[in-house]
Image (cartoon, rainbow, N blue to C red; front, side):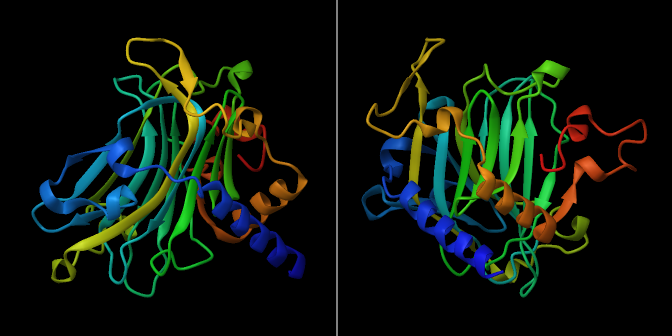
Length: 287
């Protein structure tokens, strides 16, 4: 356990470095809904989303990206957040859209958030994995990252990998690789399903609910309007994401998180797939 603790300390340090080159919310994003419930603060360094009984709020990136590493630090809704969902994801548009999801499902005070992840390719999702976190995500900012390249998608929390979705087009599994995606985030009410399957409803006496964002960084390939190709946002940025994979220590961290903190994995849900688990589930224990 001492060695694992050292791994976590190292990973948190690396996660802080990954988000040190922060973007500006004024320059990089548009507030898309929620009226004054979404606010950009401190000269563009910070952003908050709020939810009340009338409406939630959200924002999206000005740029579209085709592969890259996206980092943002989030501090989630504190206290009784049951029924709320804070979403942070990449998505293209249309009926055959691609999407890479982080969704944070609120809960009663004292109970853990559920971190919900999913991958859509060509309009098909149903690849949910859910986790509880090893810290309270409402007490401080933590870095949530998506590494997306032609070989795989890696979900990271404070630079600790929690999930990998590999490109298995060789066995007929669609993979997001051709559709550029924007970054989206929203805070909204989903008390029909978000907390204990909808059994726990939003307590509006706690409103407004607020989630905070800072240190956005996109080390990524930006698609120019009207172009099918893309360019790096900054040629001086690290390009390690282009072929990033997990080394032995990364695989150990992934295994530790999935064994200790995973609470749902579609790849083990035999009742949901009575005709057999999806083909990608047979290729690795840790997808």
